[in-house]
Length: 338
Ligand code: ADP
Ligand code: MG
Image 1 (cartoon, rainbow, N blue to C red):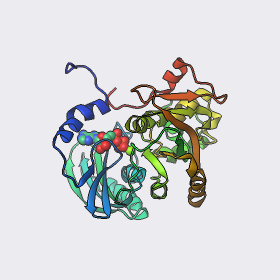
Image 2: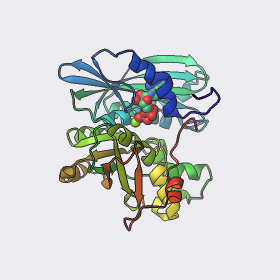
Image 3: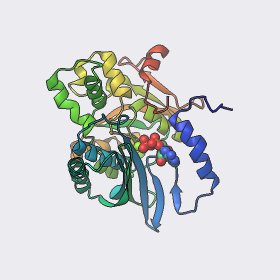
Image 4: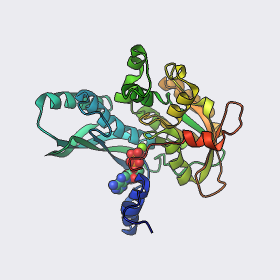
């Protein structure tokens, strides 16, 4: 038993206080999937499912005090669409719950401009919400549609699948490090990567193309290695990752190799899609990459589970495993409560 003062992590918290209670309710049969994936799934008709996801942004935690409201409006919706993308869902609509310290019209004008630019780009309508006074908090619930049974869940990976990732990893973390003065980055370099932190692109088209191709998928919000563990634990497989294969931008490649690896492997806010697929799908995936003009990189493979833990073996460019100490220093994924 934990005492009430023991610190618990975000996932243990959800499991203990919410998932256990939700499971105990014997959900109605229309609820195809509940807590634990990027979205919940509800059967809408005999051939369609609705994917539902909520993400919240809190001032001082997810964005700096005084952050540009237009960029915030874009990001608040984009991170939700990223969860829809991870399931392969097509955006349908969203609700917006806002806590605002005051009704600053200049702020609201810019925020709604950013919000609707993403809403229009991805044909996702605002359908309701709630507004209250309080510390600046933006919570969005987004809904998407899927052909029944085609959602890409975290639980579908098989041993021997390839592990893939979209785009490039680590630049959002690099921008954050530069803005926090944790590292020094020339202004021109920062300018080139800052959008990766402020304006993530939800990989919605990729998600729909991966239906029927990927065996499992998720969007990377808290760092590749930490998030990949959710696929591993739900699919009951382990993984081997080639650290030198992680896709990195030219700007990140200018950093020390330890920074490169840590930011690409564990930096937060990438909003790329990590997915698994049978080896026979390699040509199909190369084709999707060309069609969408989006790099898709093979970074490793899943292997049969050795113990209960969703274990990730990290290999160097020579194919040899990193030492335990090297692995530990890489594996610092982001947990909001630890
Ligand atoms: P993601 O990073 O993909 O948005 P999270 O890590 O936030 O997912 O959440 C993991 C899972 O736990 C999701 O299925 C989410 O819906 C669920 N979850 C998170 N917080 C709560 C909560 N307070 N009550 C019920 N379910 C929750
Ligand atoms: Mg997600």
